[in-house]
Length: 127
Image (tube, rainbow, N blue to C red):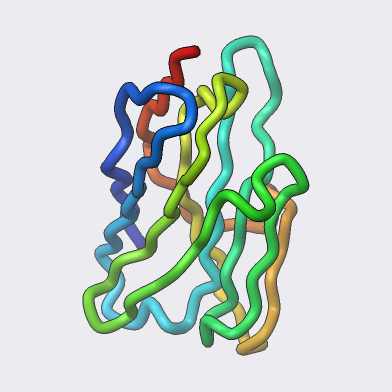
């Protein structure tokens, strides 16, 4: 059972930055594509970003494209989401998720395709 733990959330003013981290209990994290999702109050969970198991492919949702950067450090079993130019509409609970993948380049924006999830970290952006 892979355990994921997010950290780095908090309160920030609009225009500011935060870096979220996701640590894993899995020794072979390089076998997993990793994604970030978020859920705002009263809204459905939505895809934010994903990185392939080899780190060479990434994908972002339109609202965050150009502002957020996903990365991974498999030696440390850590995954990151650098969030810049934050907006109040980025306020949500952010979840990291892992998807085992045989394909080194595969990514997925579909939450149901991920087997493992963290408990989330709150990000609040004030205007």
